[in-house]
Image 1 (cartoon, rainbow, N blue to C red):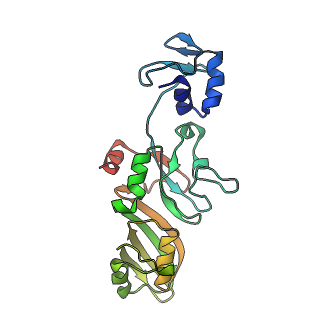
Image 2 (cartoon, helix red, strand yellow):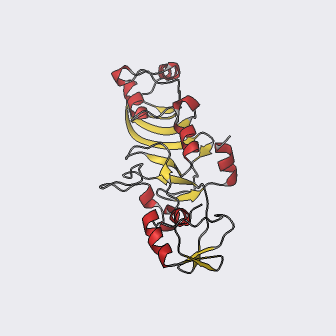
Image 3 (tube, rainbow, N blue to C red):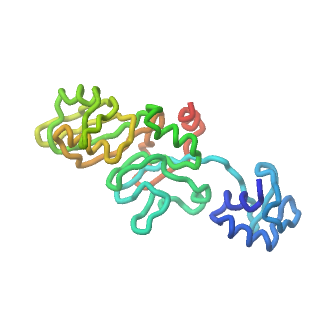
Length: 235
């Protein structure tokens, strides 16, 4: 790997900023190097910048409990993003959110720099199930279970893929349920609930495939996935 690419991948510096630092001299295995295209072994070579050794990690996986009023993006001129919630030491990996959650939706957000896994998890063709906890104003009925299972037709005539609805509580005023979907159309759960004659008042994602939201994570908190969680996601 080129030295400038390595430094960019292990710090918050851009490639251009890394080149400027390299021209002043970087210690690699106790040898002073000033060439940005110097080839290094990213695993075994000892690279020192500002007195600190840099360590390379190809892929990282972060679980976050996304709060409301935060958007699923890497940057935004107006709103706070999920990446903004990361500490600086965790931003060096240049992670991005896998899929999206609406600004007012809470719950499980996976951030990674592994594009292949991200595609697998969000592609409708892969049928990766996402579980949401939803509260609505209005009544969810037994007849709705089959409508959702058969593929609910939402606004503009789009027919959703088969999904599962699990009613936890129901009254004419308020209902609570879990809904399981394998696609991620814009505002899909809200549009599905609207098609059933109800209105979403609270929405939280609880799982993506085998990955379940850590109940110990408070809103806005995050942690790195365990080896077991990563292995299960990649099956």
